Amino acid sequence: MTKILVVEDEAIIRTALRKLLERNKYVVSEAPSVREATSKFNLTDFELIISDLRLPGAPGTDLIKLAGDVPVLIMTSYASLRSAVDSMRMGAVDYIAKPFDHDEMVSAVKRVIGKAKANLKAHQGAATGDSKVSGMIGSSEIMKSLYSRIAKVSPTDATVLIHGETGTGKELVARSLHEQSKRHKELMISVNCAAIPETLIESELFGHEKGAFTGAASTREGLVAAADGGTLFLDEIGELPLEAQARLLRVLQEGEVRPLGSVESRKVDVRLVAATHRDLRALAKEGQFREDLYFRINVVQLEVPPLRDRGRDILSLAEALLIRYCQQFNKNSLKLSPEAIQAITTYTWPGNVRELENAIQRAVILCEDEREISHELLDIDLDLVHLDDQPEGEDPYALGGRRLTSVPRHQDPSEDLSLEEYFQRFVLEHQDTMSETELAKKLGVSRKCLWERRQRFGIPRQKSTSK
Image (cartoon, rainbow, N blue to C red; front, side):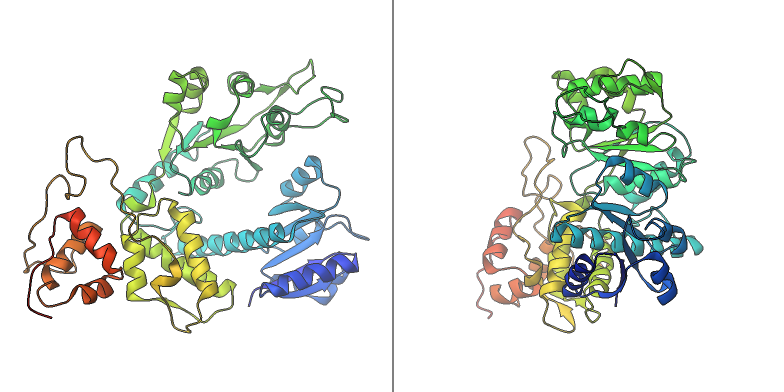
């Protein structure tokens, strides 16, 4: 059972938050102050502490040191960048402003607890020499190559560009770069450039002086300055407007930032890690991204592979996520049914790890069986087959440019097959003794899907009197 401590002096908010968390299957304890929290409870007994920033007596941030390794989520009605940055510099795991949206709070709690468990697993792995990248699971050759590059570049201050499809875990790579760097004791500021309106992005990143523009009622420090001494992670940097790109270039070239409306610049020591799913070189040629900035940020490029290219990592990830969500939702230990495993390993996961995580989470929530997850609960489109990247002029339904019409029966069935090879082998070896309905059931697909894949792979249905 996941235990959470809520420290909030306003009884109405404290009670509402307790009920919200209990509805989501958490065990919740309460306290109105830091003093009462420490006198009534052993803080290390909890998986998460949620505390108001301003409390009678000591501030909520005092719990950060008192709680040791237990993550502390700070909430406050005095929403400001300054208090957020200060809280996180003191070690708060995250920050949320009141009044908070219920879904936002539940999402933050799940994210924090999930990361804490992943970090614990990574630290335990480190003791046995099995640690790779905090929060990332995978032992495929393509991932080992990524781990190696991360280990090489992390100790340096080199600017890194992380490229990969949406949902592949680019932020985990950025965080690993920070945690393995000499800046790991300082703050890592993460900014999603696509999530901030174009009219506000320069103010958010570089700050502004009072009166710099309509609505600038006070001086505000930007996120670049807030990351001084640490790491600035700019996710989806391809969405950054050209004007902001010019200012960012100055930060990289001169090591200084000038807030909007200011005549003075401030020196900053920031390591930049950027990420994108777009082709920045192509955007630069089209005039949509500054070419000089592209070359500045592309000192070292890390490519995060899509899930479909990671082979057996897919099943390892699915099983790790299943354990996490069974614990989170207080479910008995569930297993994936053979049909579910087949579905997971034959699907191409266009949404990558994020899509897999959502599918497993949904399946655990909806599962009424006390033993296993069925493939229906995953709710994935088994007809989706990845047909990109085929050489021009070759049949996209042939395997590697050739159509497979027979498979030697003497080959070891446990050998490392591609998903397409496995499907074709199974059909060819069993179609003489099994009906179409039986074949489809064993493969965990519909008869319609089986027929369509026969067409794709050039395996015509055999006319047989058997069954």
